[in-house]
Image (cartoon, rainbow, N blue to C red; front, side, top):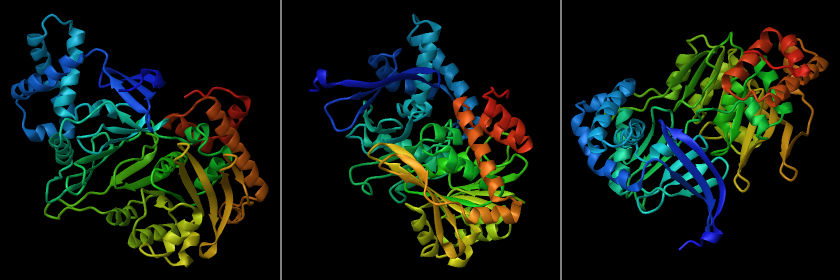
Length: 497
């Protein structure tokens, strides 16, 4: 039994899951991790059981749809509308005394449990969660909360078959399958959330599902500054590099925020340039007005046909006249060769790589399996390294390093773990040389430009301009009329969008 006196509420908040009001409460019990508890105030437990056991079967029998229609993401709205009408009819029959708005709430819940992933759908709607994890049917579902880290939930999957059914449903929606012969699945939901599934006995304790949520409101450079991940000084320098078409690489460990950081700095690309992005799963969200073509790889079908690899997309992208190329992650030698070839032929390239610091980044690029020659590395202007501090549950920009000839490094900015601050440890060198060569900028002009950008960034943070489009519009306006934006920033004016 849990001692009620030892329960401490850490946070409680509400959100909606497809129209269903939900209350999430994070509590600290007599345990090593917090508990994340979700409740739907308007639906009693007995009603849930009735909906899931009796009415769910009746609903499926009532709606005449082919399985291909249900799995087609393009027809999702149409299918949902048919199920909603049928649900309302069933509920009117079984709960005639309930008001219409209450029946609509029950109908939404019934549809989630019929077409979706059951109670997991509620977790998918909470923007404060990064990860949703099922380890097996014996233990509770786990979540990774942006503020509190790993938490146990009050949800539990009924049995191993239900976990398999969820995985199979996800697989069919992307034209794949998971079974005894193919017990591993790497796929994505229509919302963009990444899904990895494994089946017993490959995972010894039972079937698993790991869902990495797609950020509905992705990080922008102002978000990163606001939450302390990076300073205006570092972002202003990165902005200067991107404005002048210098290529950058974002490194870091798993979960360090590499892709999120890449997404944020990609919003600094001018609107009059064509961007081609290449990813295994769609994770980037750029301003809607940018000239952007997102490309996504495709796994082969069960017969081994139809694969579209990252390498194929990278080679194809060079024929699409891109001004900027964004690659989700470099993993293999041929991909890296094409990427650096693009840099050498005048394209600005931005990508991510698994490495814990800038020295390891160079080491990974120049040793197997990537194995690039040191001579090609000077096509890269800089390396940004992200770190996730697991003990304190925050992310920081660990380093910004210039890349010199043959991959030699100059660490310009570094995070001081003792003081939790990012400070300059060395002066700029090669970037000054490159900007002098390609943009005719003197060292003094570079300093003035960085100061201007810092003022604009601090102003955007103070005005709470955190969303992708507002930040992108101010950046694009800055390229057209820098004096106007800088004047507004230094005067503290509101920006009219």
